[in-house]
Length: 133
Length: 99
Image 1 (tube, rainbow over the protein chains, first blue to last red):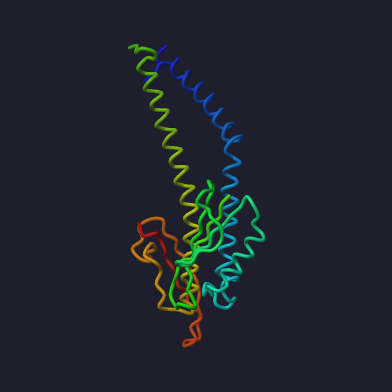
Image 2 (image 1 turned 60 degrees about the vertical axis):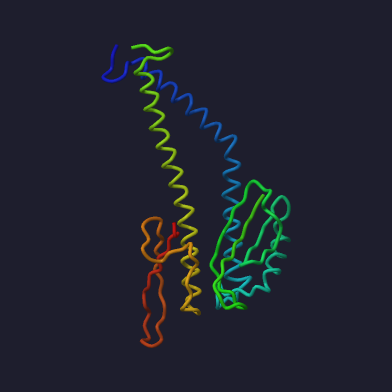
């Protein structure tokens, strides 16, 4: 029996193949990758939270958000070290300064960049927070 | 017409299937990436607004653009108080990556 473009058996075979492959891909994704994805999303949220707290509160005064005092970086690093225990690690970058551990050897790394105004040097800088596991 | 294993129409059908599913997957990936970018750009736009509040001459780094944005642009409306006129003014901060 011939369809307009493809033969009926070819169409049925393709539909069956699609259903089988689709089902296996779906279950494979659920079992193998969902943990990685949720871990990545959770890392991204955590990094965003920390960056937000850092530039609006910890490194800056409440009435002057994003105006950072670089001497407070060590205070932020200390708080992060206390709360983010192993297997988490983090890096803090402000201009050329870097504090915290090392994310270069880790597989899951998220990075959040924020714009800040450095009080000491009176210039705009980029604050980057990397969180890894 | 028969090939070695499949008939030509089944090979064509398979190709069609791969093209459709690949397009769908690429679109899904692009959508996810755009969602991440929107959050990131919104935060950066807010940073610019906050910094300009006390440092009006502040200009963002080269990897960000505020004008001539073609795509992936975030536009944030905000309000400032103008003491000279004693009025609240509505402003818009646009930001996109300089690609």
